[in-house]
Length: 99
Image 1 (cartoon, one colour):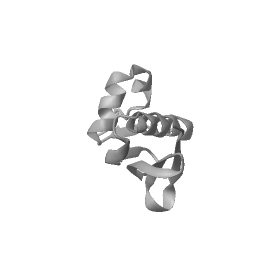
Image 2: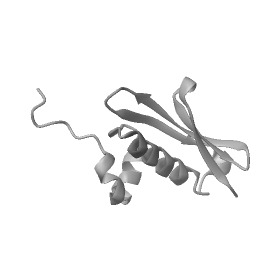
Image 3: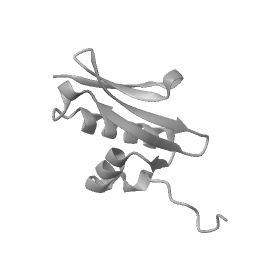
Image 4: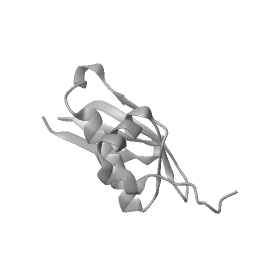
């Protein structure tokens, strides 16, 4: 089972395909200063097969590549970050000097 994740910027989401079949997505809002992951869904036929984790890893790796901090509004993405502390550095942190 091959999971492929790619950005669909015109629809503001990342799509996961399993052997070419749509299997899930992560929706986002992107600004010049951060990216907010707002919703994750996996098709019920692919639940428990690693699609959600593959999506989370891919979107967090992409944010790191874009050098954009992540605002994890989606509970699944937030939970993934909590379980994978190697992604703690990409999480948006409000500046102490922000008002």
